[in-house]
Length: 72
Image (tube, rainbow, N blue to C red):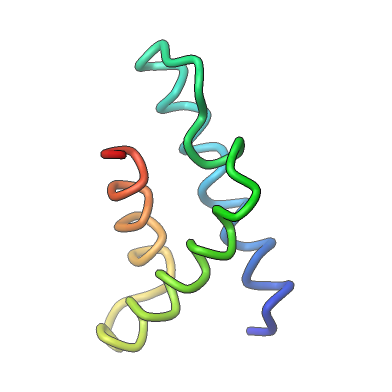
């Protein structure tokens, strides 16, 4: 995928998860949507995950990234 497509895909996948997590935890800060650099970090993470796990799909990498993000 081209980088803008990857960014859109990652944003579409992670932003709703992050907002839902924020709501469930009753936190004031949304770790993903409030960080302007988050999608770039996420794309890099998902790319690296896919390179290390060719048998998996990008959604697996994004899910792994969301777990890392929520632990911050």
